Amino acid sequence: MTRRLLAALGAVLLIAGCAPGGSSPGGDSAVDSGYEAGDGSFTTWDAADRGEPVEHAGTTYDGTDLDLADWRGDVVVLNFWYAACPPCRAEAPDLAAVHDDYAERGVRLLGVNPRDDAGAAQAFERTFEVPYPSLHDQGARAVAAFEGAVPLQAMPSTVVLDREGRVAARILGQADPTILRGLIDDVLAEEA
Image (cartoon, rainbow, N blue to C red; front, side):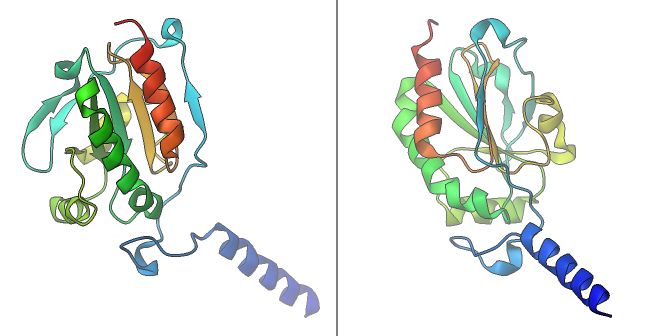
């Protein structure tokens, strides 16, 4: 009996340790489940190791067609997110500030949402005053285009593309704004 009780208690503690905790800005604990966040770690690739440009085209939540190839020559920051993801909510103001601070320096931000319908995504964008577009990534086609650089199970993930459209850096989990700005600055400093 004691062993079974201890085993049950251990299982409860293990499950509780895996569950997301706390609440998120603008949200409640009811929406704080169903995500797997990364740890905020980042990876960079030297220019010689970046491989081919990422090819992807899609439609934003407002119905605009967008092709990453049209943004060649600019540094592009893609943020993979969804509305009920607590770290996505937490980083939204920082990403909006990055957009505002870097827009005139040839940096474009683009959200990529593989989960939400238009209503949920647009409500998130209004709530957090997101100033850049997001692709409605039905079928996770954008995620597939980044296979190997952005694992689908880590939300959010942020990817920095160089001016040629190649993956230069990636952050798994909530992006620390200081780290993200440093990664962007490094890519901007590269010769065009």
